[in-house]
Image: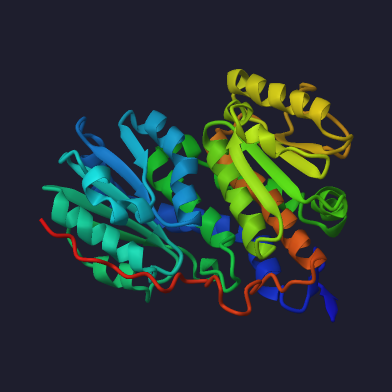
Length: 387
């Protein structure tokens, strides 16, 4: 049975995923209000820390939550003028002595949809054990999750809760990813991002109508690719990694995906190309960086069959965005930093993943009905760290 939401068709097994993709503009506005309402307490917690020249900021999470950190890292390093590292909880828990080798004052920013993944709490426990001074900013979508419960009320912690609807019920993280990333950007990035949530919301509302989706994600999936390459630079490399993961998740691993930087792709990963490959290149808003993105897009158009390369760009109106159905534009986002651009651009990847899943007869809300991969990671044994 197929029904219509007014924007996207909903096959059985896709209702949660469709709703969670299309609700993002409204949730971003709500996140903006939440951070604004928390500004006084956030500033009281964060400002004394970010004023310290010896502070290290570590952005951590697992899977999609780790990619939130990779999207944010370049921008926050620049905005804060401090050392900022994106370190997955899966790396931190497996190698705490390497990831936390420097005993310096640290702000650990934890991203977690549920907060119940084994690594989420373990990462904070290990940081407390290994560092002389560590503070925790917990950004989560689940008030009842273990991570939120264990850090609420602690003097060295601040828990920032996302709107309840951001706790995605579908298998793949969509609105949870963008809401947590936006919240961190607004909390740590300061006044530079005032008003950006509304601009991002308006841009996405313009691209999620059924006709627009048919022309973009639908048309790409109709080409029946067997491989999809996602490329971007800086914050948009983190976006490329999240995009690749989304397609793998929702297609149950049936589609091969590769993510890399626009320049790095030539150094080996380009070997993945064949005549059934399509490429999505995210174009930076930074004029200098954008040149490298445009270079790889042009090169790929010479390597692949016609209409196999798509660019995703803010609508700058300067001609560099390209034209036609292979230039996917985000209106009203000229001049926004790439870290913010990524939050609207990722919706295109979410739509590709959704359409590709449906095209294979899968149920996007649960593309692994046998439980090979779980919505909340299971089966992890946490081992004792011995001194």
